[in-house]
Length: 237
Image (cartoon, rainbow, N blue to C red; front, side):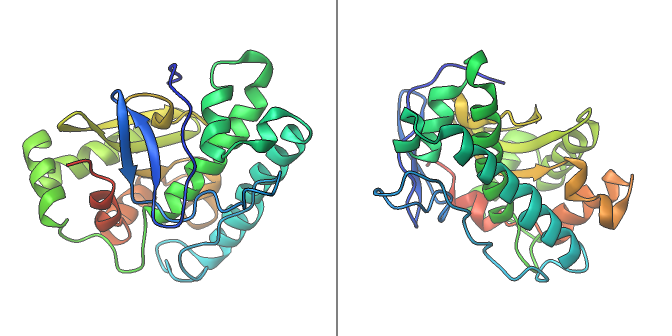
């Protein structure tokens, strides 16, 4: 879902600024892009929890492969692709914004967006998650979907129905919340909708634990791991 956007500003520990809806809006996402200004390379943000913290829903073995190999591969590929280029002096969000829809730089966009999407995914979950969303988010969910359960059902439906690899997202579009899905590396970050949380439905996210049972993985994450507090922090009020 590529769209033209203004360059995305630098991320910091407590949050980052996102160009959206003609203005700047704060997202409460910690440490997606942790590189120092003096560095010409991106770095892999640390996981926000131990690799076994999401068990039994997601095993430490899956986290080890997913974070330690797949996520890291996007980082390594990106750093090779941007070495010696203008991209090397940009933030991760700046790279995404500058490379979107540029055919010659499709590999740069894909690896940068996947690096960002994955970091957002890790922060969209926590141990002992799920449950009742905090009040501000719950009211938005009820206004937009009719109920929290209806919102979860739409998220699950989008994640399960995504053909091939991709993502399901809870986003804010103006005053309303929506569920959208994207293929491969695409991300709402390049458009006007504000990401609140996401679900990874690439096979490497669940296949070691669930094989072809994507629905079981999706429903378990929404019931037991999803971090509604993180989603509320990302709301623009």
